[in-house]
Image (cartoon, rainbow, N blue to C red; front, side, top):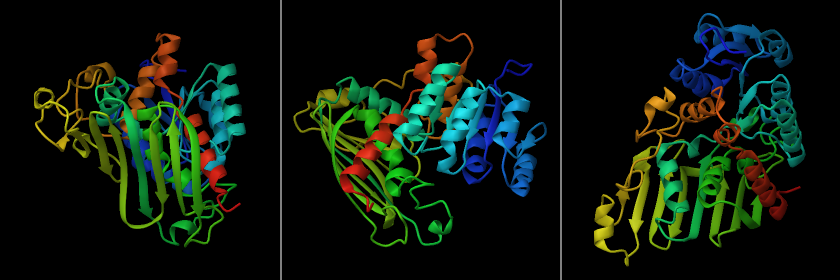
Length: 373
């Protein structure tokens, strides 16, 4: 139920680093639109620290079920280990709450089917954290590619080459099939190839290799793939936790321009670079805000991002460029979609289901590669 102010009432499940570092700042940024009323954690000390940080009025619980029964929140934000996501998401949906869950949403397509069935019965929606698609640079790049402004997409590259040491994998649930669902294909590269899917659409074929080269884990520590998209474009995908020089990169070569994003854990407009093809007239380039290769920014001077969605204040941010990719931006989209009175199609669209496409392509990579199993 909503609060007396009309704001949806939110609860967080898990009070670890991702919730403290990302979800709590997002909730604070949208405090005029959503109210945090409860938190769940099995660690009493960690829960107490979180509640002290979150402020007065946040009730504490040791189980998701007890919280749902007592609080009946409108929105549940889940930041627990991956093996718990399906159970907690279904419980929240069954209680009538919308869900915003950290990636991965679930560990198998069978689990995804359970979540979809719970949505159908409850009328609520579950979304997964894929914050890289919600910055204004990503919104504009998708608009340009999908609208044909850059010509037909032809070739793409998706790279998540990070570095994780043995200490990282000392956390018991990491690197295990039953608790994490995979290595960097599931837990790290997922953000970049979600963004690639967001830009290019549906995929048709995956060929892949994966290996454990360094870490003592069940799952892979590196994977590579070749992907054919429904639009005919071909892409390479590389996921690694063995790379000292860390970078996240998505590049799409279209008939009339290359668009490339280079960053690490989050992007802003200036991380996007547009390079026109030699045959593109200078007048056309100049009309879009640049005269030559390497024009930076969201669309290189093309018309601004329509809507400014995801900005704190919702509709008040319309027409604004310069929104970084973040949990704050994605939460804004979810709140826009949740708003009572929105048409069913608008609500469903605002809480777009990215999880199933990413889970299917993860399955394609792991299946094609064998992933050491």
